[in-house]
Image (cartoon, rainbow, N blue to C red; front, top):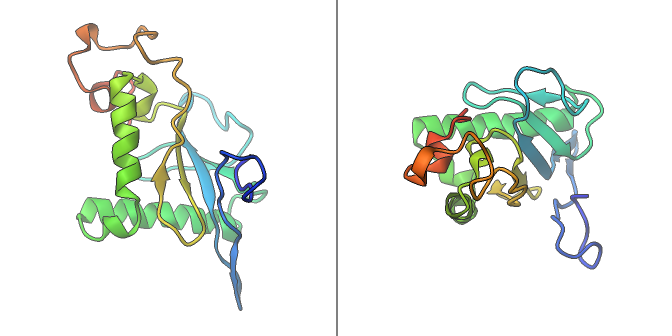
Length: 167
C-alpha cells in the first residue's frame, strides 16, 4: 500500500500527508496507473480520467470514493496542468522529477518492456507538495521478448514504437 511512513513497510512509497488549508484539503500525494484494456469500462471498479493525450489514468492511492471529490480533482488538475506545460514546452520542469523519468525510460528500454508505452502497469507517483515521478518500475511480463507484439529484431525504441503506443 502506498503512503507508508518511515519504518513501516520499508521500500514502499511515502506519499506524505494531505496538505490542509482553511478551505480543507489543498494538496495530496498520489499513485497513478496508466492504462489497461481500452475496450472495457472501469476495469478496476475504480474511477479514472482521461486527458487529451493519455487514457485511463487510474488513481490507485489515495483511495478516492467519489470521482469528483476535492482529492480526485486535485490529482486530475495536477496532471492536466502538467500536460499543458509539456505541450506548451514551458514550465514542465516544475511538475516532473526529470531524473526519475530518465531512469524509468532507460530501465524500460533496456528490458524492451512493451507495456512502457503506457499500455498498462505504468505508474507515476507524487508526494504531497513534490514533483511527479515515474515509477515504480513494475511488471515485466511483457518484457525481454515475452510478448507477440514486440518489434521484430528489437531494433526500435520500445516506448515510442510499440504496437501499444498510446502516448
